[in-house]
Amino acid sequence: MNRSNVKELLQSDKFLQEVHVKGWVRTFRSNRFIALNDGSTINNIQCVVDFENTDEALLKRITTGAAVSITGTLEESQGKGQKVEINVSNLEILGDSNPEEYPIQPKKHSFEFLRENAHLRVRTNTFSAVMRVRSALSFAVHQYFQQNGFFYVNTPIITGSDAEGAGEMFKVSQFETNKAPLNEEGKVDYSQDFFGKETNLTVSGQLEAETYAMALGKVYTFGPTFRAENSNTTRHLAEFWMIEPEVAFNDLDANMDLSEDFIKYVLQYVLDNCKEDLAFLDTRLTQEEKSKPQAQRSEMSLLEKLHFVVDNNFKRVSYTEAIDILKNSKPNKKKKFQFPIEEWGADLQSEHERYLVEKHFKCPVILFDYPASIKAFYMRLNEDGKTVRAMDVLFPGIGEMVGGSQREERLDVLKEKMAALEIEEEELWWYLDTRKFGTAVHSGFGLGFERLVLFTTGMGNIRDVIPFPRTPQNAEF
Image (tube, rainbow, N blue to C red; front, side, top):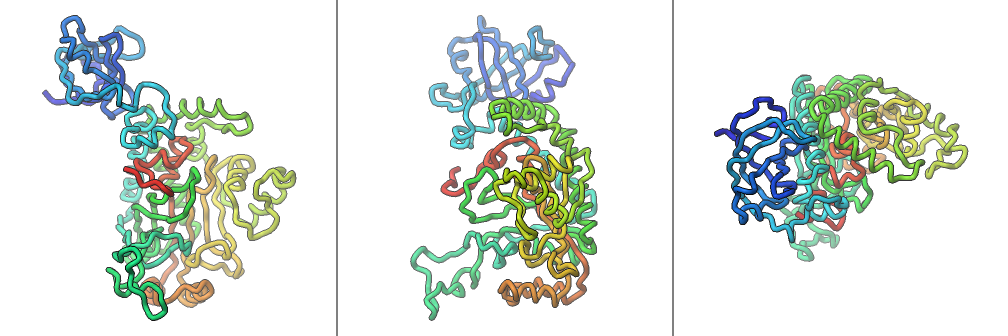
């Protein structure tokens, strides 16, 4: 007999058929009712055991966390809370679970405790829901780009360049600690290392993706990136996934169009395909918000936030206009901002971005034309010489979701910018080549996938939306 999954059985109306299902026991009550889950859905299926005719030794082995195989008849449930149930005819324990030792008991656990048991936390409703939503989002990312003529490019994880200029990169070396050979200047001689030069784990696939866009037209990367930033905030990971499309012949306006269309597509996909998980996460967030002081509570539920993004046109505002709005805003005048806005050129913080989205415009916002001094070298310089063709997409509750720009396609200007920042031309000779041979206007953006999952699930900590988080002092599992 073919094995069914729980999701299929819960949606079935073919009663009195014999079914076969395998999964893990969530609860076992009254020596009779098994709540069984196999990960296919947030919902359990009730399996009713004839305890009077079942060996007592077998009943004792039906414990939370145990893996079981069940054969029985699918019937219309007489009890409340479920439409169908399985009348068990045969039950086999596939794997025991000692109730004295199994950490994920049917009670409320703190997220800190569950992070310490990250290998088992996905057996809880919250984390199984989060990971199913993450999977659906990941599929939607590929589907969107594949349907729109993009080619998927795998850019290197090991790189010799620092795309962001941040300098917070993990070194890759084969040298043994304290045994690295030194050159005449007393510095580590990387010419003797595995790659013959200093290398790092990548912070972005953008620069390499740009070169492919200048041949294939429309490309995207979706892979792991790394940042050695010693940050323990709820928004930072040392290892995370980045979505980075690059498009030849797209200017900044087309780049903004692409980012808005892409975001709306993937969120709508999840709204259409993860209804039960989102409903559960929406309820979870509403309950969590009730425990916060009134001033800290979100004005929108999770589903309202998702529809806020999907159903509204994104407002496009220049950085200069945004600074004027923020300077004259009540929170700024009353010194309510943690980082007061005093002059043009300030780097906007999450509180400023959220004010623009949630209070002022009441829709998602795309800021563009930022000061060159606070943006990366590869962004196209505007004619005013002060601003660059950068864009950030701002979301409610989270601030910046997407960062992108029209890229600097002019060789002379790019060289000048690199020289000003002391970036060696020899290090990026290949990047400069794309400006020598058939250069053209092109644009792209980066979206941190975990930040998108964080927004979509309503979770409060980015460590809870990736299976095994990598953070300072933590590389467990």
